[in-house]
Length: 629
Ligand code: ADP
Image: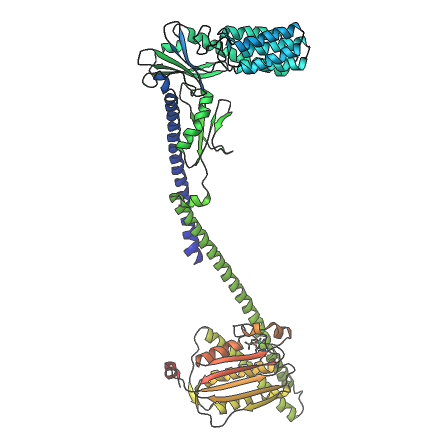
């Protein structure tokens, strides 16, 4: 029944739920892929839009602005060929003869300083001259001499020369490193020819075996190479990318990738209302770095995505929240961008948010339900199995107990019969005594068998009760008389207290006889050293109360709850070798119940037991008529 009702439907529902989860997973994967594709498209679109919007002010011919983003390397416009005007730049030097927005006034203060230095040199006061150059370096960092030469570079170069004269190697090295730094990050724009001049000057001052200096020099050289390339390009009459013939990326804006050496840029050519064109060079990696986080925050405000941008060597360029897992969906950047990949994935939801997410939640609930059902089923099966095993053990105990109980009267009868049969009993008196014992044992045997048969009838609900109006006192005395010999053999004293003038009582005399016999049998069997049994009858209103009290072994509290169960026998009585089959009290309880009465027990270990049965004097139910007579 369990497997039909629970296991089979459970397995079926389990298979269905599993299928459901698989389908649901596939659907969710597809949905997730679609939504990720949408997000990637939005990202690329937003990136392009930002490129344009960032440069809108250039298109409208807004004059030079400090607020141009860092990643705008260069913005220029051809005025009249070959003149070019730089609108903005991040170059380390600018083309020769390009109109500079920095002017210089001859500065009297500077001249004063120079006169001082000449004087110090004459007097061989090199340290003083050095200090004065340091003051000039700080004070005139933003000045050009003759509109061309940056004061800061001159001051730094002069310091190197003086230090070389003073043979101060460590300080010379520091000064060289400082001037390279200034060349990399000039505080003001100056011409390429000046840059070349200072680089030549420095070439003669290079120190041997100085790794730090070598690497900073290499940096300056690379940057210079990039800058020469860019200057050459924009100085052409028609720079390559301004001839853009391809379709515009946006109305009036042409776009292309500029990839040369360390230079990784996008160039944009922007048409202006006056038919001139602006050229822009955007450093693409810094641009992506500056914009990706802003865009992704807008596209995914709840932070439910992990994302990163990697190059073709799998190096991460920039990222949002990331995890170690490999389930990212890859999206290539559009053409005109470098070879980069946008990798996105949806973050794993927590168990509870998964439960909340509709589809899967239902299947998980079904799963939990099935698991619960299975567990209940399993517990039920284990309980039933356990119960059955116990009952089986009790039954087999019962069979061996009954066999033993039946065997002892049979053995005694057989032995006596044998003695009589072989004429080994001499006196008549002896013979009489043996016959009496045989009769006694036969009655006991038939009592035992009746007990078993009645138990089986009661179990199958086949037992028919025949109620009659009887004189209970007379019958009770007769039934008890049957025990006289056993009481005598066991040296037990019996006291009987039955009041006179008891009314006739409606009972099944055979059944009640069995009740009294079973209770008396137990009282004798379990008397132990207690040698007294009392039987008391009382009439109380509409009931007769019969109690049988012994002073024997008594019954513990835990056993009191179980002795009326079929086949149950207390451990102590079994250990003492007292014979019994564990059905006596079961019969007593059922017969009393059939008489609409009840049975009470008062007992304590070592103090004896009192079984009290209460039976109504008149039976008022219908069974009485059906079964009476
Ligand atoms: P049994 O055939 O073993 O006597 P019963 O059903 O009559 O079976 O009794 C069940 C158990 O209750 C007995 O095995 C015994 O341990 C305990 N019992 C019954 N009556 C008494 C009593 N008067 N005193 C002590 N123990 C008793």
